[in-house]
Amino acid sequence: MSAIHKISEDFYESTYDLIAIHSSLEDYTIAYVINKYLNSKLSRNNIDLDISKNVSFPFFEWKDELNDASWTLMTNTSKKRGTNKQEGLFNNELVFTTHYLVPEYKEVDYFLKIEQELKAQHILKKLLTLPEIVTAYSIEVTKLKSKNNLIF
Image (cartoon, rainbow, N blue to C red):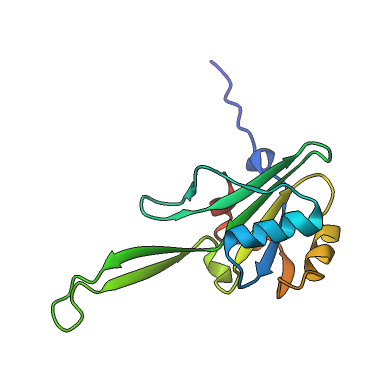
């Protein structure tokens, strides 16, 4: 008779800080601004984050080997283009469907995920000083219903 060993889910849970960012800038521009003012090196990943077959989110990442940290900047919205299949006045009209990476925070434009041992409060303080960012704040990841969307 062999023993069955189970590993707790806590063992797999990665510790990271999540910062919500509100800005009207495009994703590549916000990555540039963060790189410029925070001396980071975020770069666009060649592969988008696929949540489902038709929904994907572009993201930027940086492996900070000096501080043993990993940064990921993700857009919260993904728009899928399609055509209206209904008959009538607006048939074959272009329609856009919006999907959210974290639906609980639909008003957030971007998320900055920072995986490191130290807390990211000093990064948050720097983000709040940038004129291109309207506001930024920390989000408690344990309370998110859609936290599995942030694991990749």
